[in-house]
Image (cartoon, rainbow, N blue to C red; front, side, top):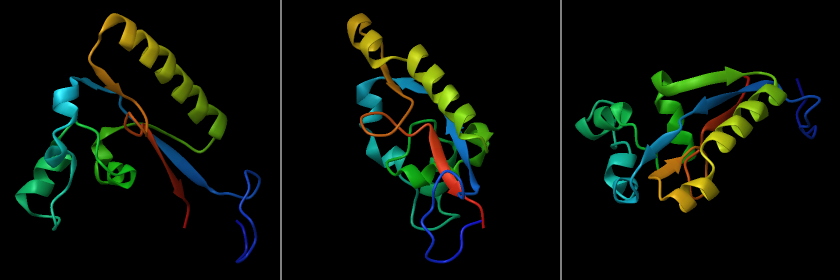
Length: 121
């Protein structure tokens, strides 16, 4: 564990990664932002719907609200990266565009985050 003020590196960072996804669907469905956001309070109808929703959240951190959708969890970064590479190879955006497949969302940016990094307390 790193001490206060010490720069975090791969040698002293203690945490884990969660993998999510992939989500595959149409661009029209992906653009339904209301379905991709939780409500203001934990028990409100919007939040309950959001927690069951399969659409990728608008914010990466909101994946952590969907614990039941975790595909895998790792403490070893090489294993996490291997999983991410396999997702990318299977759901390549290049293949998707050439074959006109529905929108695939396995990570952040244009797609949705398939993994979230969590620092151990």
